[in-house]
Image (cartoon, rainbow, N blue to C red; front, side, top):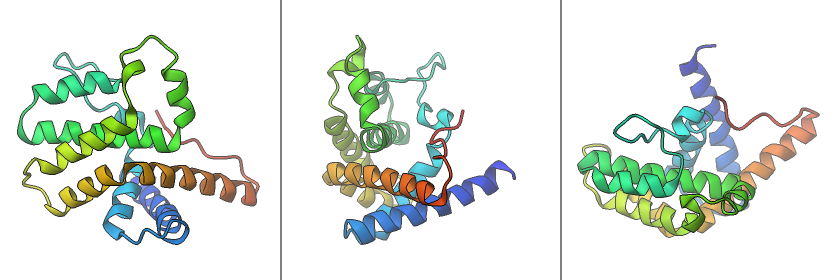
Length: 180
């Protein structure tokens, strides 16, 4: 199976999980938001997408603090994309892997001082206010993600639990979330 076909299959899988979790369990009937979250999960299954923001030397940035500095150095669409990525990055880790954040905050790193929820909300808001040539509807989704960041992070945690529950019901071991 080629990468494009597997991306479509992953998107469909995550779309079903996100729709069930957000609409059925949380009562959030927002198709554009659910689609955005499903696309985020399908995209972030690959490590290169999680760490896609790079500094001018080409080194992938792994901390939100570094990404914030890079976002402020960029203009227009490039600035918007880095802020959107910061929102996606913080939502992903806050919602799916909060236990990883606790470990990161015990280490002497720049992100030790970063509040992922606050920076995610801020980044989504900034991204939503930068005019873009792309579909303007995405700005509305980014603003909703900013406003409802904690609820969306909770929804991602519920989505993770649902995935694990389905794996347990099928007798399979949980599939890995991230592929190198």
